[in-house]
Picture 1: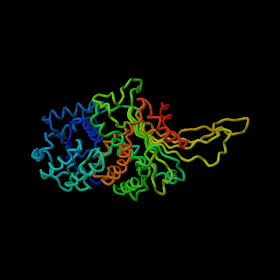
Picture 2: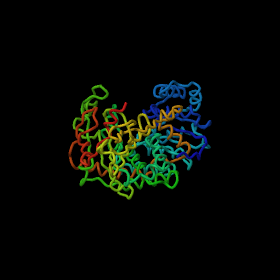
Picture 3: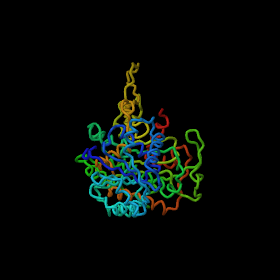
Picture 4: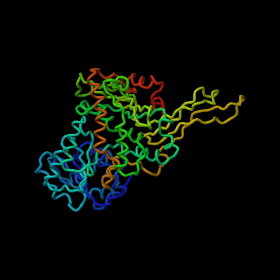
Length: 497
């Protein structure tokens, strides 16, 4: 899905260069791209923030953050090359006049990439400021971080503000899950292997589970998270993007719009969930005090600055249905939550059981084959199949046992470091490839589906179900599957070493 159609130098302008996202992810990712020698020799990196500091001070700040969050000892040769690219400009992003300073920091003959690692509420201000400085042309690219709004209406406001100055072909809406190697591997797994491509529908698949579990709480972000909740923070973007890649039809090519057209069709085919059916298809929860990894942790309402009356969900489970020919009758179970036993993201494909069991003496009920795609940690692919136990038996029957065919990325590609998702996405922006970024109509369709659920929850006046920190969510989420004789894959996750 890489289209190297722009191997030209650029001015990479990072708005919010001193913010948390930049410090933890973006600057270390730029360092890794430099280390891999994937940055064009003439590309510059311009940090933008409100704080007044010299270029030397900014360089030292960048170095400190790379050492802290880079995950490995700093390579001085790499740092020497990267630091030579660094520039800094102090800009009040709400003051149009302040943007005139860019005249001295960007080259009009180079492509300009503007990464807005800022609150979405000021995206419009930044775009207006860039326009006022007369540096926007058809070559400029702008990267938007999530969340883009808190519902469809507010999302449209933000997107309209950006669209006033940028065409859709210039806008890169980032969802870092789309840069994960195992998420990218979904496309290769499905469409490069006939064993899956010909068995990827309602005839062979019983159901699909998509889980994104976090062991952390809100990490001091009470104000943001209580307004957003787990539905807006995780389901509307990450989980629905993964679902659309799992369920989409084969694209005609690997170009950006072919892939995004197919993802959009999936989102449009999602069966609506509203006040008539939300009780049987959704569960929302809120964590109480408990233990995570042996440490005592507070409940959501006991976190710093908590509103004791808050009914914001920290856990969501959904039974989703895709109403099209390929997926008729195949439920997709989505689950995400905070303060769960461990951090894990995975897709589990449960295939249908064999229609007739020849091995009743060994297995009274043959278990289904499973395909597990581990997004994090220990990225890889695992297939559960049935095998004969080697040896002789006096009865002459075959003894079977479940076996796992395990492709761990870290073991199979041990010589290679697995890139962080942001490294992949930053490179794709510089190359001018939109395939791994979210188109506006995808965002709108996702919000349309999510808004209906949020409205149903709000209209019910029912509080979230409590669940103890360190568990896999409210017991009601078990019932979401149990009433159809299914269960979550969590027991296997807990036992995994």
